[in-house]
Amino acid sequence: MLSDVMEDYLKAIYTLQMEQGPPVSTSDIAEYLGKTPPTVTSMVGKLEDRGLVDREKYKGVELTTEGETVALEVLRHHRLLEAYLTEHLDYSWSEVHDEADALEHHISEEFEKRVAAALGEPEVDPHGDPIPSADLTPPDSSGLSALSECEVGDRLVVARVSDRDPAELEYLSEAGVTPGTTIEVTDIAPFGMVTVRVGDDGREQSLPESVARTIRVRPPDEPSSEEVSPA
Amino acid sequence: MLSDVMEDYLKAIYTLQMEQGPPVSTSDIAEYLGKTPPTVTSMVGKLEDRGLVDREKYKGVELTTEGETVALEVLRHHRLLEAYLTEHLDYSWSEVHDEADALEHHISEEFEKRVAAALGEPEVDPHGDPIPSADLTPPDSSGLSALSECEVGDRLVVARVSDRDPAELEYLSEAGVTPGTTIEVTDIAPFGMVTVRVGDDGREQSLPESVARTIRVRPPDEPSSEEVSPA
DNA sequence: CTTTTACTTTAGACGCATCTAATCCGTGGT
DNA sequence: ACCACGGATTAGATGCGTCTAAAGTAAAAG
Image (cartoon, helix red, strand yellow):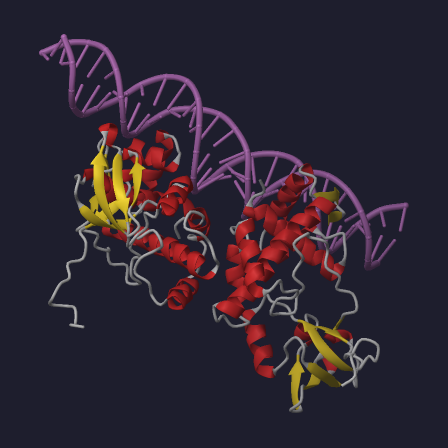
């Protein structure tokens, strides 16, 4: 019996907690959702009444376990939709976010099941974001760092990119910076501008700090002798 | 800039106009949508202000051309979704209505286009209801009559069934009464109970008047010599 | 330790969609 | 021609989500 709007707040708080850790401030939520701070204060009060968040006045807010579960449910819907639109309806990387945002609150459990089945129970969406499992246990995204924190010479694999800005996605897609691609940091200029050599064709691309900050990377896979069967 | 709710009212008025012809009464709308009459009066006032309906106080309401266009757009979404869910996500006949109702207000033009393309620009949904074309010209459903108005001995083809009651759809599916099926009326009992022989296997099924009234039928296709190429 | 500043919250209002209770047509029966 | 009754509308209230303006608080700066 939660409204769409409440779900949006919970999703926003979850996302911000992932980015900055709890507690999350009123103004950050307001900025993220495009609302005014008083609006957020009032909504957060209602979420607290329902036991979905813990709050300390003038301090900030944090999801309860229950609130986190709701956020994960919505996020599962969102990311399954993104994957489905890409795979089965010919959407591009940059178009899926808004459509998924509009639909995520309105699909049934049945729809969720069937979409997941049609996709073969995927674990990540097209942007590399983990799709929460059906039992809504929090996904583990440790082992990732922001590209903006890396150093010249690092060889890395792109793990996730932000799905929020279509223009940015358009650019990254053009640049070949997509989840799974191997990159090497070749330069870091003032103001955090990061230059990387992309993939196999050796192209170089420069990315402003604001973009590099939203790209999550992991170390390249070791040719780990234990898990890989010998050729 | 219309709310979901307004779209629902316009769709309801359109449907009622199709069933009973204009004007449509406040209480019929209220009943159809599960609202109280004062609520409907108030909403109808707003629709009138926006030029979507014509109204004469204490008489009834009728869609303007503009209002009809909106209704057709929503109906196009609804029926495309019903077709898509059936074809591509393995939904049964009886499950699609509620899901389509929930999603119809939230899909983009882009989504509509891609779903229509994936289906090959279909002209009817799984219940036989015509899908308004992309240019939103009113579909023509002349030439159909209600099964409840037919007579013993009539041979007919099922054209449309109501999509609103899942239990009824379950039953009709079980009975083999689906769009395209040929049936023959074998008996009409008191209270309008209609018995029909269904399809090729000669099964007989009795349908209460309340159900027969929602089934639209057309005469069987003549083996029309003019349009069919000789074998 | 005091003051300033940045951020948060309270106060009060608005529009939407809804309801119940009360009033108001319009028409069919006498 | 009257009146009663069914259906429609007005009146007024509620909850939600939002805003602006005003007041409050905490932490950094002096």
